[in-house]
Image (cartoon, rainbow, N blue to C red; front, side, top):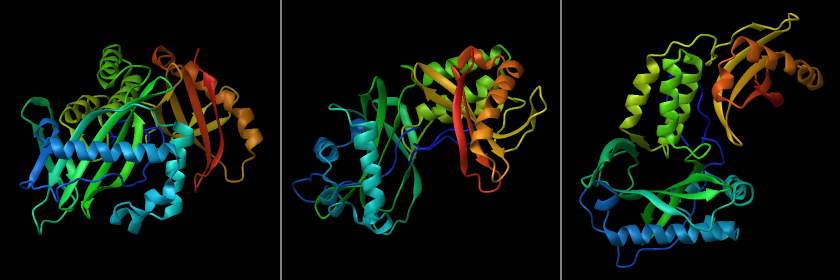
Length: 342
């Protein structure tokens, strides 16, 4: 699933920004069940025949997604998916990807891992996975107890932004059947995770701990391509972020901010959002239950002004401030909008 990253040194978001989960089948693998010794095989260590079969299955899946053959796809999905997710929920997720995000005509494989599980072993479990030809690709990943499973990450351009398309496949009934599918941005404003990490370090050196904390969150989101992958570099980014001690940065704790006319605002969460041409800072804040959305909208510019004047460093890296008002208690959405920071 995909989710946004919140501020501070929280665990990295699973899959960020867009649309999520779903699943599906696709092609098959000729020649019977592949034979592999128990373990995790990454990239160059994956047998070519298996890689070809999984990629071919993904190609069929993407084409079915483009042509909206949801009914047939669901009927051939992995058994686990069909048991845990109803057809309507899957169709909604596929529709979001096909019609809202859109699927690019060309994708490239960024990473493939295949896990063979010893009979009787239980999951999920964290496994070390490495490619002898590329030491930088070593990572830990979560695997299920399926006897033979493949984890595929591909990427493609969508409206100028490169997205990850990540999927899990189970080998069932002589076919690779997709159990999970999700997508998230791989870059932000044409920059990868390392660029945003470097900007976070720069902001830290300038004493802008709030900016640095949010930018580290973004770097970690972009670094982690899927929920089941934990790159070794993630530990280093988290250690760097832990050294920050930002003040007045809501992170699942409610603060009280007072505008010039004494209007009170109660933000409880901050995050970094990808916006056209760059990134923005987003604040979620509580308003009284039953608050009129028109009145909340009328007060929002006061909060935007408070952010601009109280935290001027945000404008150094963020283009806009996004405000999301929710009702106290159940935190149901009341109003949302954005304002330029400059």
